Figure (cartoon, rainbow, N blue to C red):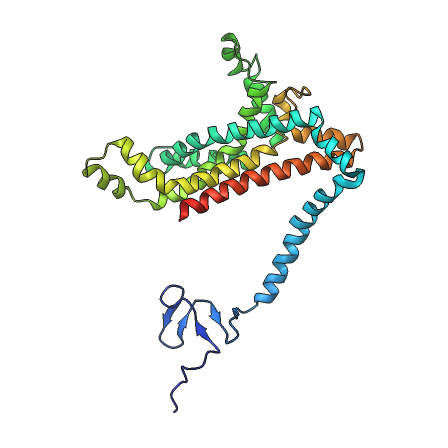
Length: 304
């Protein structure tokens, strides 16, 4: 029996020692395969890539292309006027401003919740862990009605606050409350898996070396959690900036004061101003893309 020809480059296991796994009968398996032409020879790659491209094209690229092209039907002047009208600018400032504030509030609260659910064992822990996902499952309109009921001047939470002169519902504070509610699970679920992978021995080792609790958090835990925190912040912001159902019931919806950008889009659609609605939507798309690109760049910088 002739010895196998290992000089051939038809099939070579890539990433030796990392992606491959030893199989005594068949050699190295489990890693990507490189052909003599330098291309990945994965079985079914072309079909899988075609399905992914079709799926993303129909569900993502095609709608976004329509959103980008539709505002210019009325010309550059009409699209610019629709984006920069006082009502549109006020709603965009409100939507992006409250989304940033809500995401900033979600970060410390979400990290604390993830820490408690990961590091401590207590009765009802599984129930509270499931409650975190409630904003995912609860219809947004139901959440808005519930929040408006609680934070109204006659509600369980709103009445004591109103006695102190603090009005939450039907104003900007109510919008922030609704957005915090909608975005909190994103921070918790982004940070929680990272905390689960961090053994408590790391904190104990730092403590034995003389580090105080604050130093352990700042110098040991925070650097390892920061990429996940940034991810959670970006996801919470993206959810908050386009939130509609839970906000309109508690916002007040007063033009130039407490009217969010999605409501302006709905109003223009009801007036058959499709180009104007698309123009506001395009402005939201560009603003959201800029914020997400910034968070992505920050993540890549921290990963270096």
